[in-house]
Amino acid sequence: MLQSSLRRISSRHICQQVRYTSRYFGKKKQFPSNTVINFVPQQEAWVIERFGKFSRVLEPGLAILIPFIEQIKYVQSLKEVATEVPSQSAITLDNVTLQLDGILYYRVEDPYQASYGVEDCEYAVTQLAQTTMRSELGKITLDKIFQERTSLNSNIVNAISEAASAWGIKCKRYEIRDIQLPSKVKEAMQMQVEAERKKRAAILDSEGKKVAAINVAEGQKQSQILASEGRKMEQINTATGEANAILAKANARAEAILKVSESLSLKSGDNAAALTVAEQYVQAFGNLAKTSNTVILPANTGDAASMVAQ
Image (cartoon, rainbow, N blue to C red; front, top):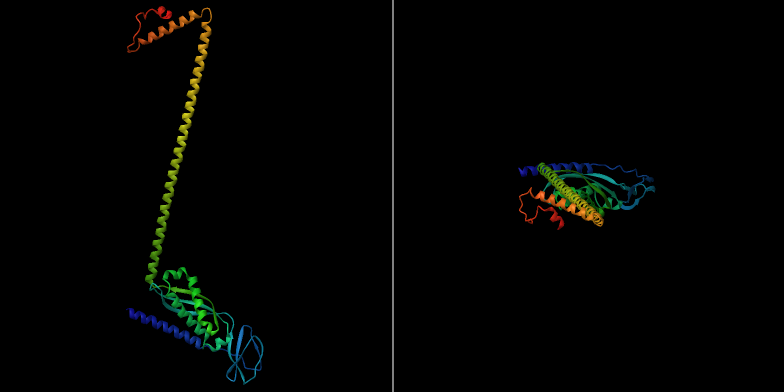
């Protein structure tokens, strides 16, 4: 099965090359008439031979030729030319077979070398682009072909320019146009993409849960701080209130004692003090009867006058 597949690929590649070769070698260039007075168009160069030997290169403008002695042998266009590079198979560094094609942009820099250095410069540079592309693809893996496509194109341009300099051709740009992967490789890449998406989704979900947990913890922390601040202010307010109450009681008692002392200094102060003591004695003695506590009292507890006298 492998050999039959290789034979089909090889035969298809050979057919493509035959069609491509016939297209280039089948072209017939239209040379201008070999007259005495000639006008060379802009962005063209005419290679002139005298007696079958190279004579000179005519630049755009008026040109005088000697009929039968001088001949216009080659006409080279100095414009930038875009040519298609046929589809071909290539094997990457990780042994993946690809089918890819491209577009090559080149320009003739030296009409003499382009005329006498190679038979068909366009066909030659296209074949060189194919071999260079296969060589460069064999140096990198499949993933890097997509990641470093610009770098790959640049390497191909440099390699073609270096090799085609002997033909008077300068490669300007090269672009890989289409890359065809085997079906199994496409399925594997699709599975890899889906796995990567699931991985990113799981990471985002875990990051969201992490942020949510941090926010909840931060909220609880702030709530506890605010609650402790509230308890602190409550305790401060309670202590302040109790201190103010104690101070108010002390001031009231001091004022009462002052009033009592002032009253005792009067003529009837002793009798008033004795009456007050007797009332408090009777009240306290009455409260003792309400409880079951054991209290040691003097023998004359019923004599309030003696207690007042004491």
